Image 1 (cartoon, rainbow, N blue to C red):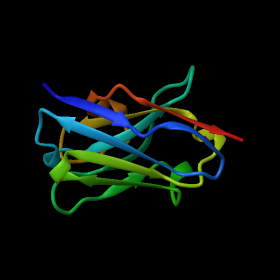
Image 2: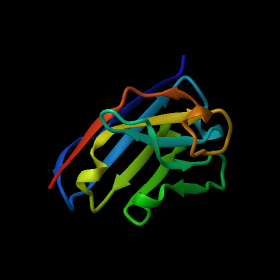
Image 3: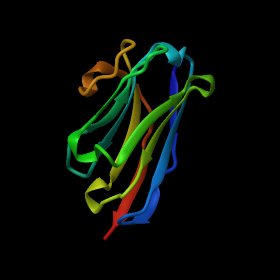
Image 4: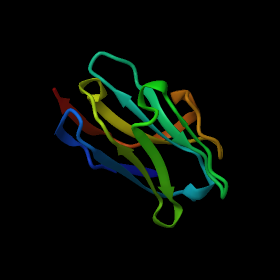
Length: 125
């Protein structure tokens, strides 16, 4: 059984930083792409960042977080991170991590077949 558990969310002020973590179990995570998505109230779950599996990883980001957020992974710990700097009120959402169906990371949430329960990030102005 695959399980993902996110942590690291909280209430911060604009300009602050947070690091989200997502620990997985039940699968060889090094072989799969991993992604972070976020969902604000009344909105769809939107892509934030993704990282491929394997030894030569590639990363992709949504435009609004480029230069501020960094996704990384530690395969030995089955963990994916999202370092979030220069946070803005519009970054407020529940953040979810997911594992993709292949070694690649994708922008579409439909390519992810396992999800965590989410962690709330609230950025005040």
